[in-house]
Length: 205
Image (cartoon, rainbow, N blue to C red; front, side):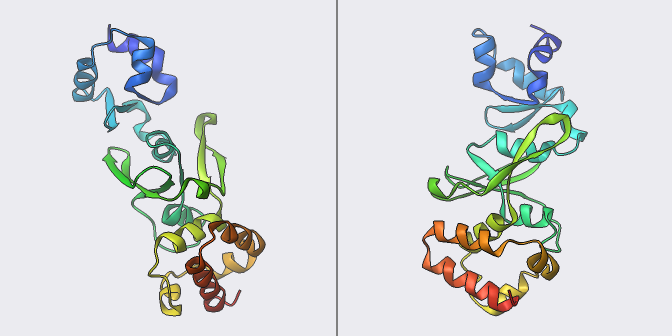
């Protein structure tokens, strides 16, 4: 099999795993993938997961792959807060929430970090359309903020809340306090309840 025959079958997936390859080609020689990575036809995303190099310079694919290489997961925390303009700094890592164990991967598309929560806390995300009519699972602003306060317990004082430097215009004009409280109740965490009260006090919400 040539790479171009392989590419024609799988290119529209953008990324794929070894099981998808074997489903199409039961006798596939896995050494082909190693050769094609060396020739830079493919990029290894993590063990057993690959992307076609053509997608390297296309917009949004680094975010799209975050959902695909470790599932179930959705983009949240600092990455989502930066996307919405709620925090001032650009975020280097692509940070997601998952019910799988905590993990991290680095590849040519970026640094990927996954934070673990219980399965019942995988909610509060939506599909955002991107290039090529694909969709990315992305936390809504309220859930991204709650995930941050839940997973980073050091935000337990007004000083720490201030150092988050949350955008006050967004908090007062765009954040749904009702939805935030509804989601907060689902966590059933007294520590999170305390941090949300601190958030309201610090930012006068």
